[in-house]
Amino acid sequence: MAGLDPARVYAMSIAAIEVSALTKRYAQVTALDAVDLSINQGECFGLLGPNGAGKTTLISIVAGLTRATSGRVRVMGHDVVDDYRWARRSLGVVPQELVFDPFFTVREMLRIQSGYFGLARNEAWIEEIMENLDLADKAEVNMRALSGGMKRRVLVAQALVHRPPVIVLDEPTAGVDVELRQGLWQFMRRLNRDGHTIVLTTHYLEEAQQMCGRIAMLKSGRVLALEPTRELLRRISGVLVALRLRGGLPPALRDRVIEENPEHVVLRLPHPREVGAALEACRSFGSEVEELEVGPADLEDVFLQLMSEPSERSLP
Amino acid sequence: MNPPMPMTALAIPRAGTASSWVGFRTLLYKESLRFWKVSFQTIVAPVLTGVLYLLVFGHMLDTRVEPFAGVHYSSFLVPGLVMMSILQNAFANSSSSLIQSKIMGNLVFLLLPPLSALQFFGAYVLASVLRGLAVGVGVFAVTVWLAPAAFEAPWWIPVFALIGAAMLAVVGLIAGIVSEKFDQLAAFQNFLILPATFLSGVFYSVHGLPPFWQVFSRVNPFFYVIDGFRYGFFARSDVSPWLSLLVVGLSFFAVSAIAVTMLHRGYKLRT
Image 1 (cartoon, rainbow over the protein chains, first blue to last red):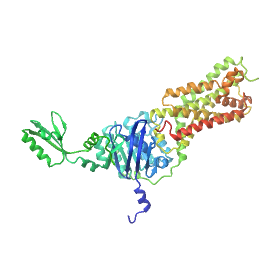
Image 2 (spheres, chains in turn red, cyan):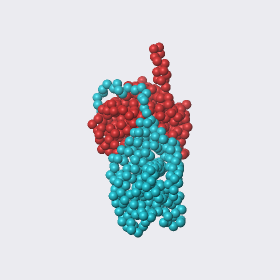
Image 3 (tube, rainbow over the protein chains, first blue to last red):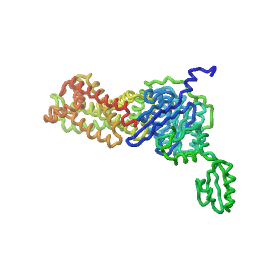
Image 4 (spheres, rainbow over the protein chains, first blue to last red):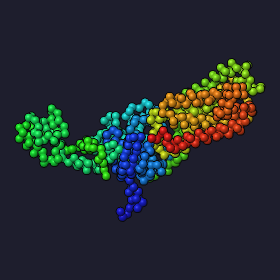
């Protein structure tokens, strides 16, 4: 640490988002159940879970849109209730719904949003965001006249207009075309490289796997897993083996099947060295292997495995 | 998407000198721009409605009714119509803006930034006062050519115009917060604002009413706004302008306290 400014070291040690014993109840429904979570500055963090897991509720509480029943949330060290001004200034949120104000143009929207955050002269930055999100030629176009993809870009631009250190994206690529999705991820990676903390929820597990260094998996308002993506993938240590067999699958391999149809069968084996034994079992059974494909387990397998386990299980 | 470019400007800046005054000013600007962009609907149309009232009722009743000695009915009607337009449009502005934002979902753009309840309140109310006054000035500017105006106690005119507009802007804000659908807001408008306006002495002096309706009028704050406003034109009124100011002032503070509390708690805005 020699040579470093102690104030800067302290500032960097503060979590980007700190969630402590967060609970949210709606009448009889518990949307979040004593959730603890800490997201470090500079991380790209994924929040995954099925519909109704509590992802959007969690993000809404972080953003101040929803009030917690109990527990605390801090953004860059600022409590989202007691110190809401600084907490909100530190946070940019891209909402899930494609919302817009039909009275204004893209440029007006961005100027207005910038003003809400107390930034009056922000023109250069607004131009730069529009340039980077390919919105420059739509600057004077009314929001109503934009396509869905363009409206999504404006939402991202609005979230960035006050240069927040922490950016939360709630299903940002839902319903957008492949080109825009790729572009958005590329832009998010650049923001992340520049030091912004990125928190995203997505249904595209492959993207979460590529983008996020750490992932939390939620189910029924509880955190089932909170680990670096690599560790999470290691949970499904082993390999997936897709086979096309002539002669059927030996009974000894039945409990390894995760997918089966008339064309092929997919087995999950705990270790690559068991592939040879599985093939030998097929030969001994009298089945001929016509086609073979071996690959690593992915996040989707981890997700499916965790989600299929009883919901009572959660992190201590 | 553009190809990668040097993103030095994307690097996190130092904490900026963000000002909460700018937040208030921006919301006021946005709310004013919103009604200005559709001014044909929000200003011109209500002015036309006010003028039509004067043409129809003034023509029919000018020779038959003399609310105050020596004052033509049309001249008596003009201040009432001006104030009615101010009140209705101040209410319509804050209530419709808020309900539209709630239903379209773009209210989130106001809930995410660090705007305080007072900033939110002040900007919505002030923008609605501006619209109410714009319509009021429009109605007066046209009707003054059709009925002679007097300015016997002129300082009361802006006082009641401002406080009346502000009171209805706050009521509109409350209606917008409470309503979740357009028909709930329409119920506010049709079953509260419209009867209270029509039974407030816009078209008549309450002295001409049967005793029951006189009592009814005197528990209606709108009556005091219109009576005090009209005092500015004729120096004559059904009750003292000071009493009117007291009633309207207290009503304004009461509804403001309710609105600010709702905004502070995030009632029906933050779940």
